[in-house]
Length: 146
Image (tube, rainbow, N blue to C red):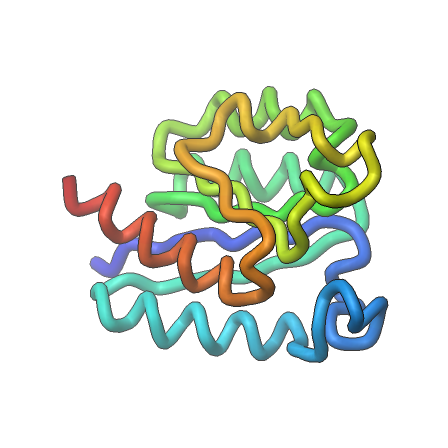
């Protein structure tokens, strides 16, 4: 059975490619999903990409991942800096977690410099644009192979 990576996205990422292209570029979330699926396939893995503007939905998907996913790549968007609930949910998940940010959060407003998710993540990819998602899939493949 193929192992699945859940790629979870938080608020406003449904507007990827349309919102603030000077920060986030023109690539859509559908493009990201296609790129990640191609990379995952090369490692014998599959991806399931989901996006929600609602914190509770993301928590529910993390709970679901406990039964259905081998790993999680997560871009919680602004919830990165505020959500203890997402951190607590990630702490219930046994597989690898990679945190992804399209922009370099450390070059942005100071409130974006703190991440609750980083307390659980095996790695953080920030500032690599949407390519960060594919990098996360590659890193997860390495971690799952160990």
